[in-house]
View 1 (cartoon, rainbow, N blue to C red):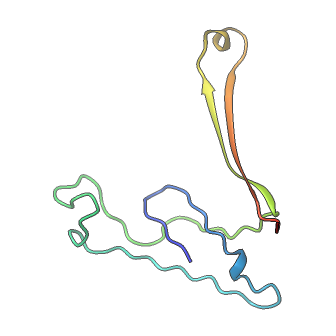
View 2: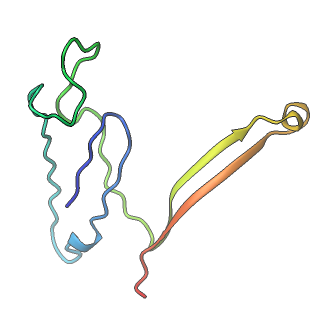
Length: 102
């Protein structure tokens, strides 16, 4: 139903269509950590200065969200001359999802 490649970067998968609302649900995850030097699309594994961990080493959350919700919010401080004197300026960019049927 989905996948994620990357270390500590957050990600989300939408399981709305897979949920059995009138019964029991089971969530299963699989970790695939191929041996070093078996994939040509990754950083070569020769003399790396990090350890390639395997498995899920952080918490996992299953969250119920309303049909309309904020999917992402980025707040960026703006370093302007005015902000250093009296107030802070920020830029807010949001992405909203609307899962209501059309």
